[in-house]
Length: 346
Image (cartoon, rainbow, N blue to C red):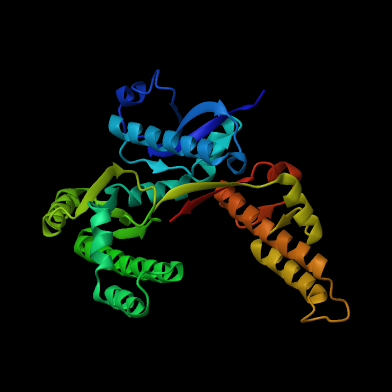
């Protein structure tokens, strides 16, 4: 039987009425509050993303996104999404995450207060017709004519050559069209990120970060582009969405045993600082790295020291989020409290 865990969809500010939070009842999700923020969560079986096949990963992604869009539809518009698949063991751990990352989360929520994401997906309306048009490009016709001088039909190699030229011309056309679209909407974007296109028929798959009060103008530009291309392109707008592509909370859960091992590798005491950790690592590196000590070089132990150094840097960041103190405790009791590092992926 799989262990149950707490799945975190995102974090919202506690600016909504009690009735808004009561609207979550019987939806399968609920809020776990801490000071001025709440995590929106549900209970589900623990999962390991790297162990999911493509089908189940796709199902989880759709469920994650639909739940967040459902929450936005209820009125929780200022929602900071959590990375797909974030699951912890208990409600107490959720509170610890909210506490450790509180300052970072609050500052990011303020950034997105008036922002939304609109995904713009553009495809060719008549893709077979476009390929036919490209195949009649003068460069491609010239290649065909050259081959036909000596042969009555195109050989398999000739067909491959022509196919590659068609692909090249199609890529050029898609790139130019995408740039024209992006240039047109740039004045209304704060930022844009290009996602992978699914096939040759897709011109662009772009995430646009825009101010809420510019949404109408943004949509007007899309309508104008649609008219300019006279139906040759299909424009699909997805959103408004939370700022998935621009601000996502990531949780790094540190391993207590690895932190203890790192402390021992760098021979640190019960209390330290980031500068002392760096100094201890550099002293180790001097004796182990072949560039500084050829006679006593030990690549394996150098790599172990390097890993220990970066493990402790992550631990320092997590500890500072939790306590805000310059000195870092490396006692076993304190280390167990500082194993959640909250980051914002931008």
